[in-house]
Length: 258
Image 1 (cartoon, rainbow, N blue to C red):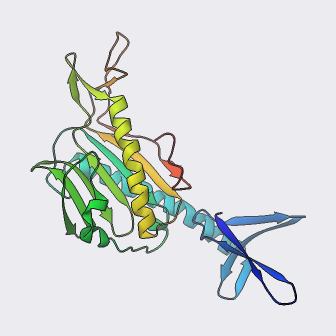
Image 2 (image 1 turned 90 degrees about the vertical axis):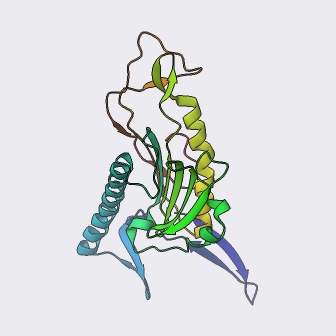
Image 3 (image 1 turned 60 degrees about the vertical axis):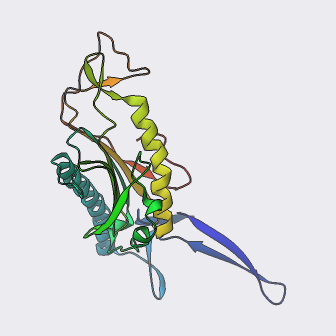
């Protein structure tokens, strides 16, 4: 749990220690101390121990949130791979980056995303130097290129970010279509701080799920270093790669591996 502490001086040379603990989205939490072992929750009257029914509900809720996030990701990857995107998009292989605050699917979170319509320079698409922007039913989208576009970022009203680029994968090299492994990783890691800054400005809390997916990559090769290949290299044998999610607990510490 993340918390802050403050000492307040009172009369009679006494002091009060105030602890402010952020809402946790990965509960329930158990307190164990000197033989005491209970799960607790808090309401308007203070803290109280969870009974069996409440504890069962708490664990079920945690599992449900994870399932909802994964279902959302799968639905969006299928939609993007079928070119059902917020703007007309390039049919080339696509890199899809999702940043999903856990609180976005744990309740009815809604954020003031219209601030990025008023200041679109803060919501630039991945790997772009110039872009356009508009409001849609889901929130605000920025996009780069000419119709069909090659990069867009969709900011959903619940704080979820979806960044897609259609020109980073599938380069022709030595007679093969290849993924420039170093280049696409650099694009992702340069863009993650932009995503984290947006989430912080919106007031989103950690943890945040970061997920990377590659679509239409069957037959592509992974280029390593200077895009060199050898006799042991084999092409990718599936159309879509959905890499495992990474959990970010602190915006100041980007994930070391996506």
